[in-house]
Image (tube, rainbow, N blue to C red):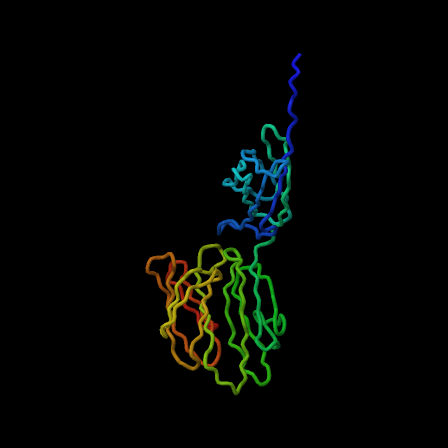
Length: 293
């Protein structure tokens, strides 16, 4: 009989970190909204273990095919998870390598309904805020918009102040869940402002069956007073322009469509202004100033 001693399987220590434990559900109109899960395998001495076979399973969502199927030289594996369904899910992870005991780990993820966070803040801390004519708060309010649509923010009168101009928003959670913040700036009636804020929203209408435009990030915006800007992830570019300066020309250039522009003119007075520049489904689009349709 052989007296050779058989080695016992070693212990594999696994740590799991979910980079974003709560994500919005994916839609068919945009790249999936996902979270990454970082998996690290170490031996009992704290050294990384390379070459562990990694398997994944879950009930609600999907593990992207580009996820690591074995640990690298740093003992690391990266998984990408997304889901078209709403709910709580658990990503189950198993790691195996000859000479080590099979090891199991879990990564909880919550998938919430696609929505766009909307925040409205008044500069004076008071003044009723209305959404599509319905009073939703005073001074400051936060809402979650779940349905694509046209949303008009307006304000109640406050004695001694000029009421802010209404703001027409195109909100389409099918395409964007980037937060939107709108400021209601009440100005004392006797105050003569040196500058006002101009907000330019660059968007494009695509066929998602809602007819509501979605934001265009990274669009260049040019003003006839010489200012230029780039839209943020929500499609907004903000400028300070000289108050009561009269007619101002605005031009936006789409970042991906060759030499495709949208233009508008707006009259600058003593109040902040908002304008929507929509490139449109056939890139003809429209410019919407104030509440014009």
